[in-house]
Length: 159
Image 1 (spheres, rainbow, N blue to C red):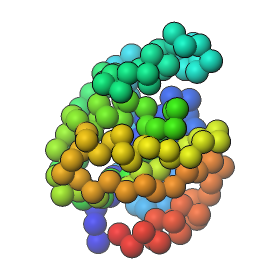
Image 2 (tube, one colour):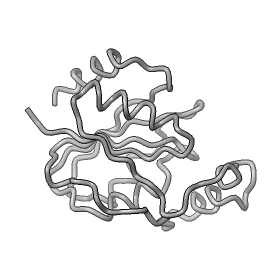
Image 3 (cartoon, rainbow, N blue to C red):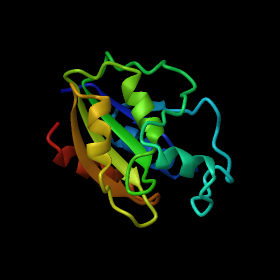
């Protein structure tokens, strides 16, 4: 049986809620990816082209700083990596996280939350940041997903 970690970034709490349930469903450790500078509601206003999130997402080389690099990656072989979908991809802080550690030989299963868009090119955008890892598109979840549904999904991955 593999040792699992649920690592997640949550700007508004929705992804965090799903991540906590997924950790419970899988018996995984939990790690929150926190930005060095917390996002405000103004930062997250996707209708404002000059908002922090809009500026970051327009620049695919943007790497928002993370608050720490304390995730115990070495002790895990399966990482569930969660984030909200921004502009049909993962927020660039996820690239920052992936580039901060050695994910060589690890399986990374993505999960996301979204108000309506799909994964888009999330996997494609993340692979260069962890080239030695196996990154798989997982599933989109709503905040009201149950622990039992998450357990069933994770078991279906055959990990």
